Length: 166
Image (cartoon, rainbow, N blue to C red; front, side, top):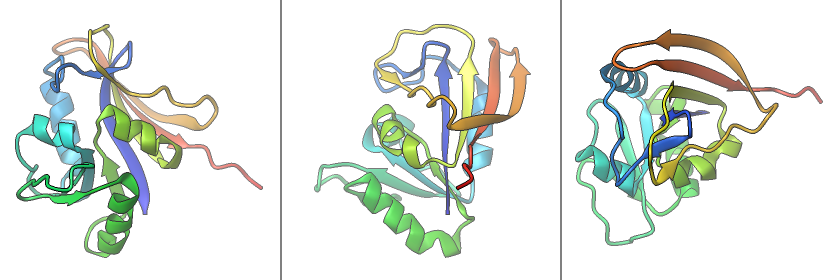
């Protein structure tokens, strides 16, 4: 099972403010939907609530410590570990790549086990209260880069974890 982060952040690492994206970039939203369609998508409760409903054509998994939380149309689990164990049991029904879709705390908890990172960087600073962690130096290598300019300058990056030889 391959674990991939998929995120968009500003150049100062902001991914959200008051549970919303501080920008609207249709091409990035399309990229997110196209990449995760048909896959398992793991996210935190706040990210799920920011979407307003489960995203169609994927298995939405929501992580929350609230045992009474309900998310109709999604699977609710208490931890990252439980979500990954669940994904492991379901991946035979889905493609091998499992996506982590946020938010900041979930990204932090899973960066050490991520195999790939799809990161859209918006070339502007934004104010925010949720952040994408800095990729550890030497642990990831850039494998793809595509620059865009509409509606504001941004770049799609793909990073793969460096495989160290023993």
